[in-house]
Image 1 (tube, rainbow, N blue to C red):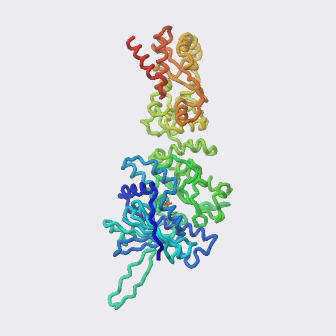
Image 2: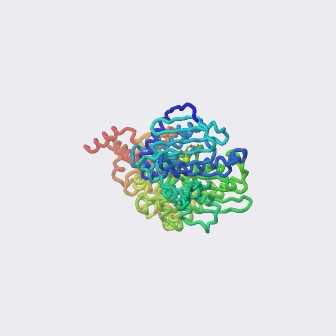
Length: 630
Ligand code: ADP
Ligand code: MG
């Protein structure tokens, strides 16, 4: 019995997602089953949770489960659950529109390059719409657990621009999703095929997934009564509660794929039971690949860590249970002691939760330590994917700063290429005789850092310099002034102190400075306000000049970045350091127009090397040409 059917259009963005999903997910088409089973399992979780306060919701049918059925003649596959169900408004909101801002960000991050977008979509929970990869029509019938039989909703769509909606009568609570399979997708009508997919992707769904048993008619039976026998085809237990000794790597990997909606394996995991004033079990995973929206650290909807209380799923609680710099962690926490009626607000300030949180941070850092020590190659992979996020912890987690710093990896003047492979411990181990500080430079690209004139003197003395070129580095290093008792020094800032001066060095320096005074004065006169000061450099050997900022000043590339982002940044003229032995510097230190041109050129070259844009490129070109024509 159904009332008048209304036809509605999908939101424009849904259409876009549908198109993308059906075209690009083809190589992973069996994923639809995992997604629909996972929605069914979520619906059972939600009902179990609501029934804590309103037991009447599950009265008469308290065995929460998922059922998978075939109809060969009609070429349909149905996934049914007796979970929470949906009202008409919920159907429209959840299925007809893109409710989650995660999906919106996903759409914004699409590049238009089909290959890249396919990868993106692979990392993205495409959820319900994946049904249209294999079906040319989908029918969903749903009745909310608290609605009467006459208030069920039927939704149907061919996955193009529109869907149909009507009110129907349905005695059963929950949702059934029926896929009308495309002609070429007959494989999903074969019970063994579907059964093996459930084993692969959904074995650890905590509710039973049932299929009809093949009951063969016995020969000789005159008129075999049609017997319906259901059979549970998954493991249907909370994997994290099983003893580690019973679990194989493949079990963990399967579970990871289920909870993280991943296609690929986890990189590593740690499974622990904590007994004490706070008893809980945790199973946390490090993914192999960063998700598309990892950089985004918005508070409103971080997912990935599920909170259970005594086996009842409560909520996604990544924000409450993990600091932002560990937002890549996936897994479950099952507490014995938290009250079942816990709310997000309570989680925010609960003392027990704070204990669990610091326990999880410790477990994660332990896991990373172990990986770094025992499986360097895997750790390198982790670092490429998640290093920039972990770096946030140096600034944000004061208590664990030293532990996190130990996990950092950088490119250096002694390592091959751009790969960040040197740890601070390694650096310290091979420090030069008499060297007291850890030297680093920040820049906006690897090349700018590696070829920076500021490194010349250090290179000449065989002193290693860490090359930092990620956006976050300058900010992070503001919080990392010391490691293992050693100061960290930016070689492009303040006075460059290369350890104790050798014999006679101090006197020599004084003399040099005195000798250079007229030269420095003349150059400063040519440059006027464009520089704050012209100084004799101790950083340079080959190059004529470089720019430096004060020790506690922000690096110039950082200022540019902030300005580009629309922030007000105090403007202060840089200090120009010159190499008095260089012939160009000597020419600049003379009087007259040519000397003035050379002085300006020294400054502009130093700006270019530092990565800055010239204020007046045309004037720069004229100047160079004047000098070339000479
Ligand atoms: P996600 O599961 O990541 O939220 P989906 O596209 O898989 O995204 O599902 C969208 C929404 O539709 C779900 O969040 C849920 O609210 C609703 N939904 C889907 N399937 C079911 C179901 N079987 N029972 C109840 N609600 C469902
Ligand atoms: Mg889903």
